[in-house]
Image (tube, rainbow, N blue to C red; front, side, top):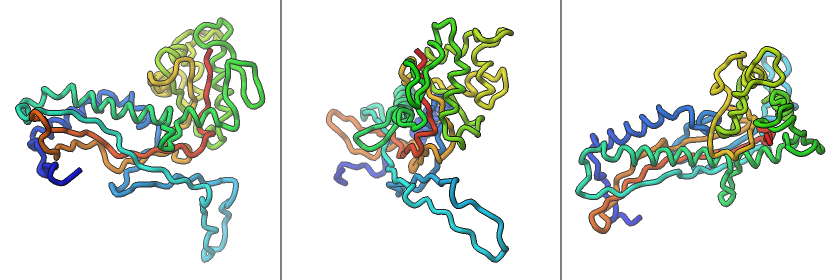
Amino acid sequence: MPADTLNFQGILTPETKAAYYEFITLWLDANIDNQMARRLLDTTPMDAGVEEFPVGRIDLSTNTVVPGPKNTPGLHTSIGADEIRARVFSYGDGFDLNENDVNKYPAMQSDLIQGITAKIFRGEDYTFYKGVAKIGIDGFETAARANANGKITAAASNGVDTANNGAWLTDPGRDIRQDILNARGKLRSKFRNAQDRLWLVGNSETLDALDQQDPNSTIGDSVADSVAQLLGRPKGAAKNNFCMVNDQISTSYVYLMTSKNPEFAKMVETKAIFIDDRYGLKPIGNYSVEIYEWVGMAIRDNEGVVEIDTT
């Protein structure tokens, strides 16, 4: 943008901007459980100048560390060709503020600012789920379908794919626990072993199946009670301790994935959510206020997530 269209001091007073940031904080605090990407991904802060970041996976089948003399150096682990580079992108939106309303009653803009905040973090979640092909970001849906160990399908077992044990919401003979156990077996072993990091991800309608009574339980357990221990949680754990509900996920699909593990997927943040008010006057007395963040994400290992077709 040409320098003469910028207002370098900004149009908002410090008090108004502080109020706007408070609206953002209130939304983040109220919706912490709904931030799928932030809750499941390992997130690393980086300097604002970072444009690309490395995503590596160490092959634990080689370079085994063995004891040696104290004056002997190690073999020096290298990820080499196993490293990929991922880019940082801007997630943002904005609004026009008329010159008559600048710094007047900041609370009048609270719904607008919180709505923009919701859109930004919803955009993060959708990118984590579906990816953005035109800029080279793969989502976990793509990764799960490329998992070399297969998926859980509604069709008959075929190759590495395993048939489910009935429709989760309707089949009297369903066995959801077994489906999740089968899916767990399709994770790479190092992800499978860290059971307390495993999560089920789906929309609210599909994950309602876990609130049903388990037809295979002889003591009236819910399905959630039956599967909690498969995911490293105690029986009776609240469902939101191992289920991530996000209504952008397609109905009838659930994903079992590891979380907070940079060898599966990684997010970096080079600029936390930021309010930029340095723009000049536009026609009919409007100023632009932009709200954005700089974030990058990448999935490194397809075997960290498994797709389950629940139909």
